[in-house]
Image (cartoon, rainbow, N blue to C red; front, side, top):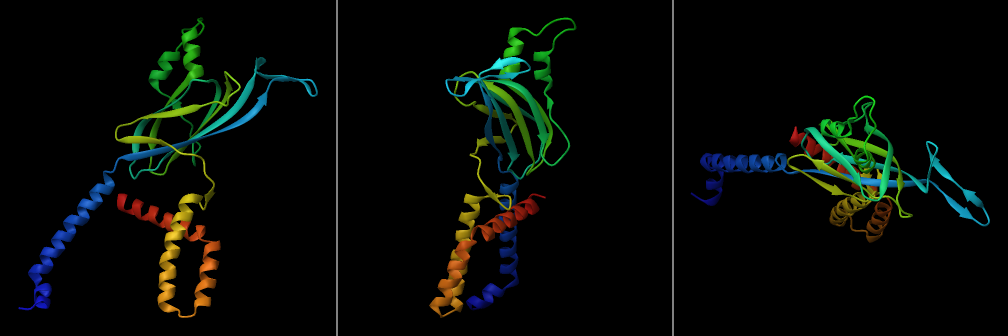
Length: 257
């Protein structure tokens, strides 16, 4: 029996198919059980600043008739980048150099807002006729805690705070996520193309372009055609890169169910 007959043997085919099935199942489980990743970024915009200038005069900023030195509008977006869905996710926003004043929350793509967690509500509970304690004001101005009933894959939430820094420096606000099997990563805000961060789209575009050039060299003999095609592709490389990443996301979602 020669090598070709051995390869074509039904026993070998069955064994190879079984091994292939085991490997496929193992890879699928690895993908499905991969640790979840949440990412977030923060954007700060100055609303106003109190100052006294010999040329422009006195500029005074106030919030609810209370004078403040600086006023910022800070927006935080948190996104579930994993292939898993999560329930009852606790999200905490906190700061050490600014006072959180009013807030606006949103589950992106829905009309829903976020509710404070029960533990946070208990900390801020004030009996009828009583006034909040200094500790309660410190908690309210320094942190917020929410419960997200459902955080599906690809879902994002947005938190917006009007805040007043304690110094002339811009505010710093962080997030913490308390959820088993989830790690949280901070990311710098990036310009996007077709919903994909431009650096990632550019990198994917380069990879696709290299493959396309190899195929072009294999099929076309005229170097001018290859050079013109390469130059043209380079001008729009981010677009196929973005589409490539979106296709990979769809495949991941299909594998994840």
